[in-house]
Image 1 (spheres, rainbow, N blue to C red):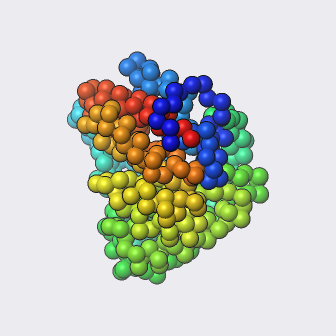
Image 2 (cartoon, one colour):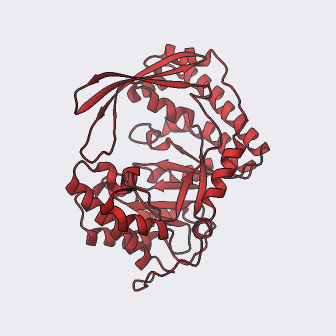
Image 3 (tube, rainbow, N blue to C red):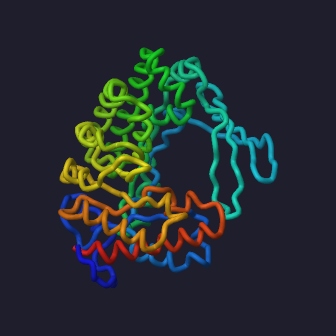
Length: 383
């Protein structure tokens, strides 16, 4: 890859660049994915970063398509503040559904930067009876929102590639219940879990049919597999509770002319071939040690001609990295995975590294490192 190219005016559209890479050919340069937290959009100190993103970022952009509700049930969420200490709020969330109310409690700290985060105190599902209650009522198939999809697609134009969220029932269950409880239910309540997966994934496949009948062919994404692999879920349980159900869903997507992209943090190296066999077309963010176990060059060797690989610059470390260290990490990622296409440069932490920010000093450091990330992608990513 060129190490002395001077960034200039883009002549290839962002959509074309991503699609070329995903067809396992070399575009003009490596696509550069980067989005930052909404709070930085109007931050004067991030003006240069926002300008770089506007000109050079090649992003997958979420658009509306289908309302998955609460596992397919129509749902309305209400919020009640239980406690407010000034530094933190304790909030009750209630999902009102045809299967009854499901309640969770979160704690939301306030940070000086205005960046929001929260921690679960209580989740929606606390015992198997909650899951039985959900299954007692059939979920509702609903019409895809074709107008909203088309409107968003027109708005994006060639500035990126759109994607729609896809319900991943087991992944959502793990998020909406106490994680260790769900893993225990796989052993103590396997029949219940299989009934849940048959019903909910069957619903997803029916919805995919409706989406296809409406003329929507696109990329779908879910945020689930990071909790369904080691060290959380062993290979035997993956083969029993993940692979067969996911395979059917992705087969339905492919038959409808769509593709699937998986968001998967953590130790995914030993699963990459199985992900491909399961029907996953792209995986991100491929975290390097110590955050995950991804050797990007080895990942490229194993599946890089069959899956779009996206990663693996550790932006969760931007709060203590230097711009030179970031540039070197970008160079190494491009060198490992870019040849032949099939790769997009991507950060592994949320919101352009700002997800870990807790004060102004860290914010400025992250902005500087995010700028270095883009500049290095342009410098080293020319084919």
